[in-house]
Image 1: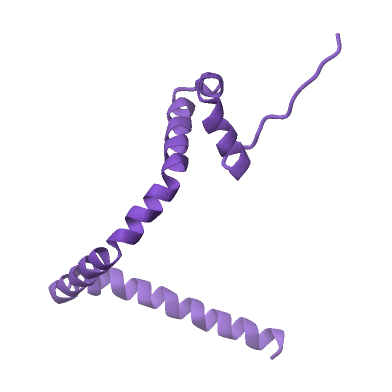
Image 2: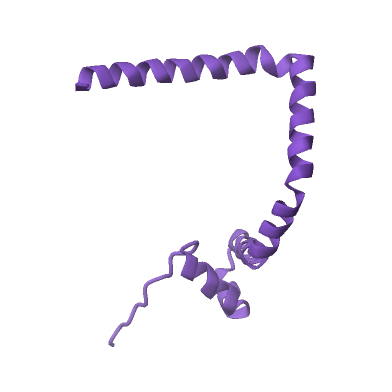
Length: 109
């Protein structure tokens, strides 16, 4: 395959995605039969994977709590207080890369 064929295939794929999105938003989304089937499918998935969701939440509970606390203090423009009060949560978020740690500035005066 040369570059021209690759670009043609990508264009065809892009057009196909756009047309399927357009079809969903204009036709399927408002079809009562589709809505009924989609809800039934999602309810079935919800019931079959209930334990997985609970397990995933329990595994990530500390991270979710740390992010929520961080965003609370961030919205209040009080991140320094977060660093002081919740040092362990701050360290966790820095370790996973959620927060970029501020570089230490040392000045000699």
